Length: 461
Image (cartoon, rainbow, N blue to C red):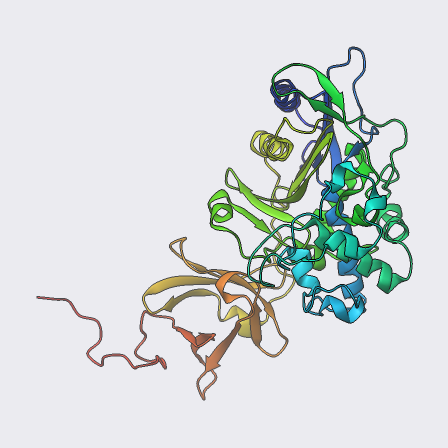
């Protein structure tokens, strides 16, 4: 058996370094640091800086802004998985007195609560948290901008409410819960609400001159669950591996799949741009590749984390400037560089341990009207139904234990597939959410709704 090389090839490493060098130079960033994760481990780290003789490594902290929201979302999903709340619960059920009515926990996670994007003036990212000591100060007198649940509208105060929810349910500060339940189990020892040396300083770069201005590093107080954290490429590499694979000590893979499933109605521009939002995770298409992750920014810092489950790759890019390089796009391109230069090795094909004859009998071609489909048994115990032409509805189905299967994705997600048998036990057709699949196109011997013309198929003279 052959196994793939663990280290990246020299040409791949050079391409990665070239990409971040261009990003740092064109984006005029004082420093830029990046990492690539493959098969759950960091396989490359690179940095570019304007300071001679000093390059930030994987242990230098940068502020990661809204990537903090993903950490907060993990905490909320943990509460759900423990049965302490339901995502459909109104926030008021667990955190009364906020004044946001029937906004649900799911609405807050998906940015569909209709809340304002920011807290009331002054600009919260560059002013003291002492100006917003209570949730009412964060929300303001008119917290809602849109009807609840009808549109995606990104909201920093919304994740402030989720942090307060965690504190209310756990009975201790968000920061302590985060450290105990996420940071320590995953070994993220350089991720914290406050910086510790070595850490980068945040800078503003003049748009029309190559000069710098230091940015203030305010403590965000109540807004911390929306954007407070400092971290490193080393820690975020481990966090990205967790987001892609799960870790039962923190959150199961199924809940993480739920987080990266689009949950918010997208704006027209987002549809065109291939962008959607899940539950604390962004989902985007980039050059034909499906990526999940999150971006982040605070005055003086930019951050991007993306991962591709299909390619088992992730990338992190951090920079210490207020604006400049498109770090999330650069991270997506780093994933693309490795995926294209060194494609993932597929798992070895293995046969089923055993096959139920009643299920094996169903394998092969079926027809929905005149469209051909193939039903296949797979080694993971599922069945798949896919169009023979390559276009059309498709899904995998999990067994229910009673001879039926439930769809897992696409149009047939949640729909039930069952084999309808004749009195003699032979299969007449497959029923999938009332759609009939027969062994022949409009099989005259099967129970096709509406019947089949008794003269059968014919030509036209």
